[in-house]
Amino acid sequence: MYQEENYVSVSYESGLRRHVAHTFLWMTIGLLTSALVALLVSLTDLVWVIYSSSWTPWILLIAQFGVVIALAARITSMKPSMARILFLAYAILTGVTFSTLGFAYDLGTIGAAFLITAVYFGCLAFIGLTTKINLLRFGPILMIGLFALIVCELLLMLFGANTNTMVFAALGLLLFTGITAYDAQKMKVLYTQYQGDEVMLKRLSIYSAFDLYLDFINIFLYVLQFLGDRND
Image (tube, rainbow, N blue to C red):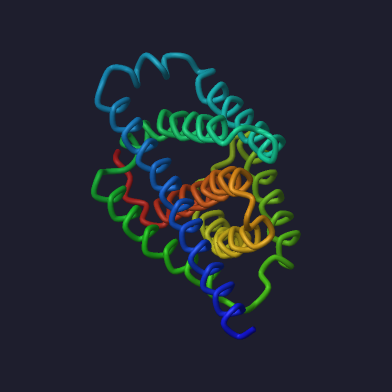
């Protein structure tokens, strides 16, 4: 009996490590895709062509929102290949959006923000995967906080107020500190629930990669605001 339990435990840990590695691999692919697209667009005339219309930011926002809805609504039924396509589509759209960061921040600041984010994100993900505290119970609070932050920023933008402030950066960074650890633990819990269902695990791997990708992106943007060396 002991040997059987030990085998099950080893099998679970091995499978979880593969699942986590696969998830973070896809998250990294998404980040690299966004970075390469942003670099390509910003270093060519594409940035001027794409942003020649004042509607471009809204079109990109609506397209990104559509991808999020599609993934969230059908992740449990769509083919893993379609989930990957939607994820990469979102990463490309984000890359186009980020192509304008070079106009607001110098490359040194962007690079420093990325390195700080990578270290900070890695620590949070590690905490989420290893802590014995049930972070999932804080999910509703985190989601309410995120919704409130988004609504406040949108309302201020509509009234022409500046949302790129230290206050919003601090609130956003604090919020995504919790969300990142939460999403890392949720990835582990989802694996436990669907262990043995290889197709579902492939879907959930992309789903978790997308969640963590969004966490990384948001932390990066808030860190960038804190560093704040803008080009004039």
